[in-house]
Length: 105
Image (tube, rainbow, N blue to C red; front, top):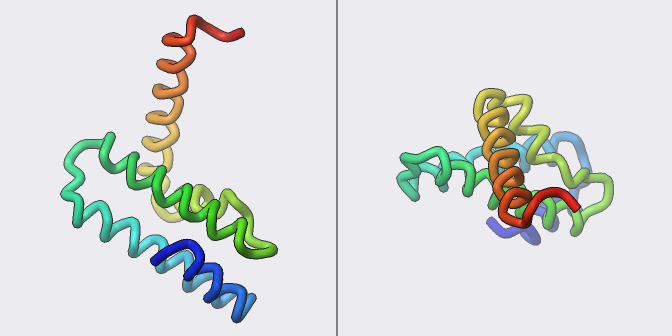
């Protein structure tokens, strides 16, 4: 489902119940993508996490009252180990970028 479709669903019924359902849908979509793509490596799974985080941010921009960090919060609460791995991978990537760019300016 596209971010605008999630936003339409939420904007038609701005309730905690609707938001909870959208969170469940995001979680199912994330799991389905990992399965469909046959993600065997951590880097592939991290790519799905990044993709879903970007989608959540787009969803949040199209609504009022939904935080742009909602996907990260969902991951931290429901998939704690995966959330930690995702953040470690992001830190490693940032570290490589700083190194490639010649250090901090």
